[in-house]
Length: 394
Image 1: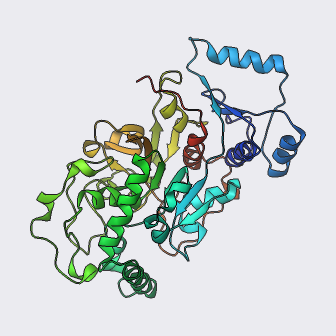
Image 2: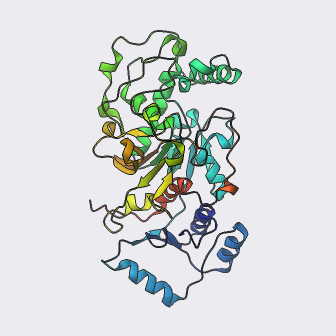
Image 3: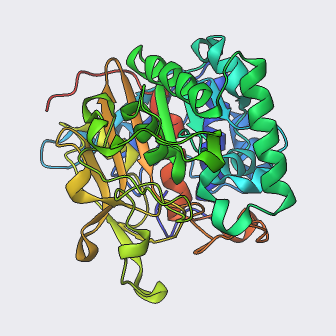
């Protein structure tokens, strides 16, 4: 899985998932040649690699044992982690969304990793209990319809989405979309606390935490929910209820395309040509989880924008790990934490291969980006629940 040896890094994850689905175990060789996978040598796996265009090397038993011995050496920052079972994957997304609306959906399809879609009704009916891994589509859990009001309130798609959200909330027994979305966020919180793994990108990251922290508080203006917000609601926010963020200031202007001070989009002063973030290096033997999530063939990844592009370092809780950062701008791009028995990862930006994705832009063709480091980070998270659990030492 290094730069020189692999023609299609993204589909290699699909091959690994396919192998796990055959009830075969895989070893993920952390920090060895870009985070390589050691698979059993069978004709069917070789054939599947050839069909999907994935580069592979056949090793003798002696050579494989030698590699594993080298990895086990205390002098090497490497580790071999056993992947045992293909995780059952859910993507939280509304009906009618096109696959290119969401980077995770696109890369799962491209890598040929199976998933099911769920939305509010399934979540509220405890449907998440069937899944090991949940991705949150670019959702707004605050009930403010993505803060698209200023630019798109007269657009047919905005009007239709607002009507659909209101109808669904009423069907599920809620008088306001914000109340219904909060109920969904609380169910997702319980799923993670109970042992689930949640992965979120773009606005699903900060809007999720904001919704949890504003439980019981009306932060929506009349154009969103038909009545005024609570007076002085900023002072009522409870940061103890959030997963990742603290001490943020909410954006109170409904015409501003922003949720809070968490997001760094409007504070950035980095030109596209030099916009990169660096992955942190962890001890593979002592901290296998963050090491796993950072596996890549490069430590420097191209930046990309979104409604929530990246996170203010000063507003991230101290118990949350920063996995990727743009140090010159004081921003975190990729973060991970533990909540109860479960895990969450937040990844800023909309599409790793579409620098400034806008409404109506053409979809990304992943055939043009089979070795994308930014998309690899998503797939690291997809495979993470397959790992044989080891107690974290730090």
